[in-house]
Image (tube, rainbow, N blue to C red; front, top):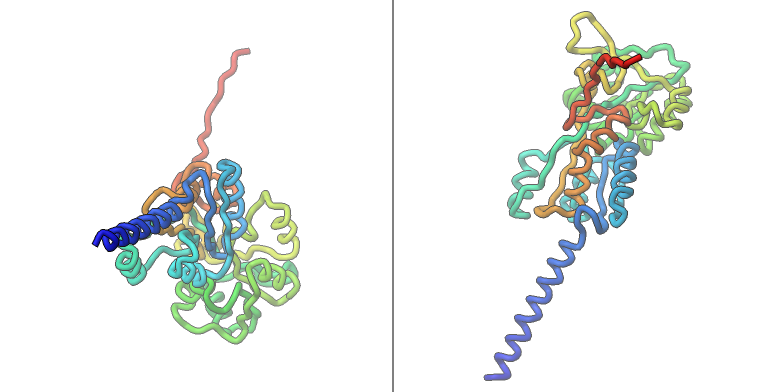
Length: 304
């Protein structure tokens, strides 16, 4: 009997050790130390790379390994436990919230941190660079015979947005071609006279980025109809036109994290929503959603 109880104690002790080991692994990273894998919508790559660079320089004991991929693949990673943090162009829908609440026993946190836009780009030699929303719909459905280039025909946030907001569920025409990624969209349009491309503003709108400025010598940002303006105005995607709702193809940027303690994923998400993170979005010419940066004029008097 004594031997039996001894084996029971050993078994219980092993279970406790395993639980403790799992808890240690789960809490192995904090906001200022450790390593985490995250999945990021590829259309946001340039600005998120900058966010990671600044975060890691602020907290040298952290390492954030980002995989850039189509939006649907980010959600697959999130569901399969490949990552605890994803950065995408939408929050969780009702079915997803119910699923995670039932499986995790807590709700993953998500919030918008900035507003991006889908930029419409055309070749410098192209004759048409002003489009109404009806024009874009006719191009995307194939009624207008213009080559339309996107960062994939399926599974990307750009494709989803255009299907939902421009086509209202209609199918793409056979003139729509899929590039490998956002950078490839710019390259194809820059080498094709009669082409129109759809790409995240993060890839083409940063006035401080030498590479993006070089790209604007081969492609140009098109003007798109301002649907809320009364005087038939058109707008290019920019921080200002996104902020004041003048550019119609604006979209939010979200982070979604499934941590119920302040670990590295939560720490990085909070950083992007903080003043420093918001300034990085602003410097990348996106519209920060958490902090409003306003210019104030003032008169400074000096004594002669």
